[in-house]
Image (cartoon, rainbow, N blue to C red; front, top):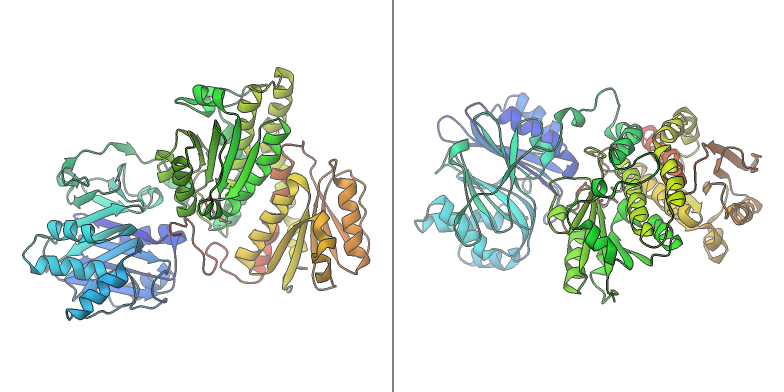
Length: 612
Ligand code: F6R
């Protein structure tokens, strides 16, 4: 989860490190720090609790440091509380500094051994064992590179780290095992970063390191990569797959707002070249062995976490309605069971980041269980998941920076619809039926834009939620996951407790919660379940609960003293969930802003959950 950046250059790298840490902040924002080697060969280090601007502020207020080689880190605390002492870079007497992402699983054992032998520890982090190991190897006469190699051999866990040492002032040594690490090449300068976003503004090409790699980063031509066996290897360099312009906030107040409003464009990019006027173009959706695999698929198993999981829950309805058996599961639960996976099941992992530890582990586990066909729906082109699966369906939402996922969700749903058509064709979907779904999908971007026109209305509605502590969200069928997603958004950015229920379940318990202080939100599209949902709405009203009903324009639900109906633009059956999630995203956004919360960086959370 933490963000790592490093630079070897001919210019002062402090501004670059700070700027990149700002970009990486979405990975963790408990504390941050940088270390550089200055022109006298001395290490300068600065760390601060809080967001990166605290660090930048402190550096612009006197403690000016500069150097042409440096590393930086923004932290999401795992081991050791949030404090300056636990902020990275961790150092040994300003001789060796380390920034790390991941978890060193055997840190307790190594620390105990170091303490017995007289080492002094200055933090409660697992990372500090790396610093002491490297120092001990260097003390025994090894070069920095050899010391890092020796250290890696002693570590267990999933991690990526970068080392700066006064013994090699113009180099950074990095090691990767599990967590992502990239090398970026700019104009006569080299960078390392934990993800592509941090490289977009500064590098032109990049290399993704493989697990077991250790690299000596120096001036461009001299960067050397060693694989797990210690042999020098060439890893392919590729262009940076992100346009730097896409990570600018522009005129928006927050990235979440920008990303909500980008949804029509994100869906259009995801559809580009993949649909004709009435059909899906299979080889534009999926490449490689797609046809061979899809021909054999008899069932689908979806694994994902959080918002991506909710996209998978909706897709289950779609696949099943077309005769394709489908199970959708939370990745972190799947991996600790003994699931039975039928032959010829396509395992679909959905992940915006492509780095979510639980989803990756579940995918690995599914392969161990004999699952032969795997597909990832992913928004991060160079992420780990894309290298683990047989087929990749890229959502082209562009970088999603706000911790709360929005545009990734809508593009995941669109991608799942495309996939549904490809599979359903093989189960007898006629050209006429395909054309109807495609027409509905093609109309989606303009419908999303129309739904976004509700912004002012939702802004004023948000005032009725600002002082509430609890909210109930109801939905049925494909719109129950939308209620779940609306509740998740409200919880994570506004810190209002929100629970979502399939509306039919109300009378089995949650109805007891209803009173005048618990507003209920009902997602009520005009579909075959509307009559049932209306009964559930009455159940709440009869108990004095205030209801906010998001219904399709033209349906018969009427506002009264306890029911406020908010009309949502009508959409077809497949795309309706994508339209209905928009007012709920906007609601959570406006409530959080009104409550003065840090919308893009909610407390305790981070994007890219790279730890279990
Ligand atoms: C919620 C949110 C998270 C993610 C979850 C999975 O707004 O962003 O629930 O959806 O952590 O992340 P990915 O999709 O990157 O695997």
